[in-house]
Image (tube, rainbow, N blue to C red; front, side, top):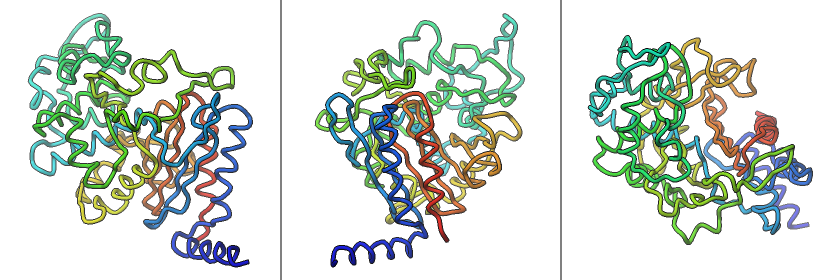
Length: 389
């Protein structure tokens, strides 16, 4: 009876603090477990926060299907492309220090980009204008999606430095006029990271660690995770014929580079590892206008600049969506379950976040399985469905 009373009181307190229904939130891990039982995934970690409070942090399923080891809420996941907004944050920090402007031509800070050409109809020509830092952030630079011939094995071997990789990109022709089209570009984000490295005066991964992760208390977030934490990383899967298959074909999955052992390349387009709890600190900092627990990471102006749509009417990454500075931004709530102005990002292995300023809300979905989005969509709908104020 006492335990029931305590639970009731804590539920009422949570409701009062967050405006989220505890009973509805409790159904999220139950729903996630149905996907595990159906055999479409191994497991998930989910987090919902509102008004600066974590309302629900849950694990469902397993870190590994074969061993049936239970998923833990402190599991460390590969974020893949959820890394990209963090690179943009670092660049905005340097802009606040007067070291760059997002309208700067890339070649101002990386001289190797001088003379970059556009390949059109088999002919090389000078583009109408230079690529800017803003183009890199918005995926409108014209730069290639992935490494070109010669370093096509980069994402599997991680065998070159960031400087070496970006030098090759600087000699690779762009594919369309800067600003004329939206085309996702890992090369563009790598180039942005190199600018951070050059202007920051320290290695890219060290900049993230010392300027963002350590001040925010993100103790489990890394580019190169320490060996003592490798056991907290779930097995990576790929969805094949409706079933998760251990992803041994991907060197970053269950291959040689899963833990980045011996890697030279920090993979700024997708290299971060983190936990749901660490990401909450990062995203709450954003909802707070750029600061958390006495540490200011970004100005409110920088944050507003990053999270508004910069791509106009260009077709970007899905119905109702536009693109900001390395953030997908909801611009039409009739075409997406997200509130207008909500921003977020996903990753190759299915991880996803949304940050909703209108609702003062954060949702984090962690999974280690490429392919499919049904589970993520269910999480987003259930998180919003828990709002009752």
